[in-house]
Structure formats: structure tokens, C-alpha cells
Image (cartoon, rainbow, N blue to C red):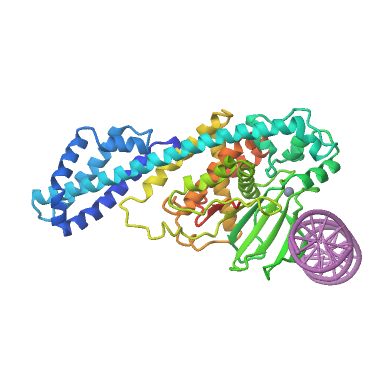
Length: 486
DNA sequence: CGGATTTGACCAGCGC
DNA sequence: GCGCTGGTCAAATCCG
Ligand SMILES: [Zn+2]
């Protein structure tokens, strides 16, 4: 959020990393003069072009659309000059420093081109996602309208649609199962609101819950304790030995408010018993503390994505799996939705190690800038997409979703379920880590699917406003990935 | 003593 | 219909 508001970060990080990478590359090229000499002339000409106002400006402006190209140029050139001055003290000749300069410029240019192409690819993916999302919303709206007119009788005669009618495009998320709607008049689940505005709660609960699939959100996390600390109060009401897993499955229900329908199942992973799998079901009918909001918001967002992608159309699958493919372009198998089970399930995997495809991290001169710079861009793009539908509370939503991530991470740490990467992580964003992209996926999922809930669930804003207290936590959800099991 | 936990019983859904 | 399984209930028990 801050980075989106204040231009400096990209410009600062970029030259810094360029400088670091440039120094490395300069050292490498100095040891390999013959190879550098081959491209000498090309690099030099390119540098000329750039210094005359071309090259980097275009690439940088693509990466950081809000940045004037002249600033980037200035930063890059400044860095190079500094390097030249430092290297000049070694007693080398001017041609030697020129050679280094040329090598640096060439490497940097290639990097910029690479980044530019990847940026373009990401843009295309985002546009594709946007289109899919648009179509998906239209599709869901159509289905809802069809159900409103004729599908009611299939469920139960006592279930009726009336009152405010079906949600429109902006209210689509009110159809969803999970959502931290809290307090006040929002006690009835969105699903219940949608299916029946007047039927007696008992009949509606039983009838609708029997006929409508329940969305579940499963969270896998490293946890030594018996249960994750997610900010809610739970009472255990059962325990079973599930088939295929020697570890017992514990059943909890929320006791923060009488009648809260939220339940969760806690079970250790059979393969790795240090992994705790917590499955949430339902949504709270009461206000949540900030620590609980983190998990509730994230899981509800995942449920939203699941339900938006659980429609029988291919768009649904695309909508869900797209996020992983798009936001985690270097990874695969991060998004699946499971509808084969009685309940569609989203899995938020906070245990996934570094992605194998990204694990052998190359000594990229500047691994940080791409994702770091793309974060506000992606968020902004997602918000922009969303704004095309709601046009409401863009900045507020961005705040809320960022807070969701931060709070989730902080609450996870409170729950002592670190993964192996937290120990090596700093408080800074580590965009090269796939977990960052996963967090990004969660954030954008929240944004894309959550604006309606945020708008409709304004009762939670009182809690969200307290999230600033937790902003000292790190921004990265290290080692997390976003599964949507289908 | 009140609330939380444990644990066996019970129920519903599903496949054969 | 029967058995299996997942999920829930509720009496017994534990604990602060
Ligand atoms: Zn609750």
C-alpha cells in the first residue's frame, strides 16, 4: 500500500539492486574480458542510446508505470558513474573502465528486456484473468437469476426468493458460503439471505445446508501445538479417527458467540505430523477480533474464490486455477479445487517450501525488483478490475486486504506454526520467494472476491480498523502457497 | 461449581 | 439391506 502511494520504493530499489548486480557483473566480466570484448560495441551503442533518452526509460516505465523514465535513467546512470569512479581507483585505464561500463550496460539492458517481456506476459495474464472474471460474474448472475425464477422448487417449497431479490453483479459474493460477516443484522449467513429472507431459521438452515454444498477452507500449516491459534474461541465437541490417517481428527465449534455456526476440523497430516490441517466451515455471526479477522478473512476469501470457481462451467475452473498460474508464473500446481468431496474445499497451504522451479535461485543481479514492483501494480490492477464493478472503496479494500495478509501472518506466528522459511526471512518483502506470490494470490483473491463482502460486511470494519496495530509484522507469508483443490 | 474436554453412541449419506 | 465412514450429540469426566 505504501509502495503504491509513494513512488520512491521502486526507484530506490531498482538502482540499488542494479548497483549490486552491476558490481557483480562487472567483476565477472572483468575476469572474462574476452567474452565481454565481443559485445563491446553493441553495449556501447546501446548505452549511447540510453543516455540520449531511450532504452531503459521505456523498460522502466513498463515496469513502474508511475515512474517518469527520466528518473530511472538518472538513477541508472548515477549508479554506473559511481561504479566507474570506484573502479577507476584501481589503477586501471580508462578503456578498462569503459569495458566494464559497457558490460554492465549490456547486462542491465538484457535484464531490463527480460523484465519487460515478463511484465508484458503478466499483463496479458492479468487481462485474461480480468476477462474471465467478468465472464464469470455474468455467468453466476445468470445462474442466480435462473435459480430465482425456476430453481427454487427443486430445493424445498419453503425456500423462496423475494425481498431484495438475487444479488446483482456487485452483490455476487453474498451468495457465498463463507464470509466473516459479523455483528448486527448480518447474523444470517449470506447464503441464507440469498436463499430465503423470510423462512424460519431452523427450516432454512437444515434445508439449505442439506442441499447446497458447503464451502470449506483448509489451512495447512506447521504447528507443534494441538491447535492453531487463529484468534477465535473453540470448543471441542468430537474426535474421530478418520480413515487413512492414524491421527485423530478433532471437531471444534466456535464459542465466541452463542449459535455461531462456524466449525473447524483439526487433524495432523499423515505424512508429516508437524503439519496441522485445519478446515474451517461456515461463517461467524459475530464480530471478530483482529487476530481472528486475519484468518477469517483469508479463509473467506479463499472460499469466495472456490465458490466462484466451483460452478459447472469451465470458467469456474479457469477462474480459480488462473490465479495460481498467473500470480505464480514460475510455479505450478499451486491452485486446485476439490469438488469431488462432499464439500468443495480450498486449501491454503502455508507449508509449501520454495517452489522447485524457483528453488535454484540464480544469482540474478536484481531478483527483488520484479515482484516488488509488480505488487502494487498487480494489486492496483486487481483493484481496478474490481472497481469496474463496484467502483467503491478501492483504497479501503486495499488496506483491508493488505491487513488481512499481515494479520494472517502475524497470527500464524502467534500460533507457533512457523515454517522453515520464517527463520531465514527478514521483515522485508521477499518477492523472489514463492510465498510472497502466494500471499499476493491471497491478496488479489481477497480483492477480486472480497469487495462485495467488504462492502456488505461493513460490520467488520470496526475490527479492521484496528489492524494497524499489527502492521509491524512482516509482509511476507513465507512458504505459503495457495491451493484450490478441485 | 461451571465450563471445557473426552468418548462412546447415534445418525445420515453412500457404495455394494 | 448392510456395512462403512464422517459428523454430531450428550453423558461422563476433568480441571481451574
Ligand atoms: Zn464464531
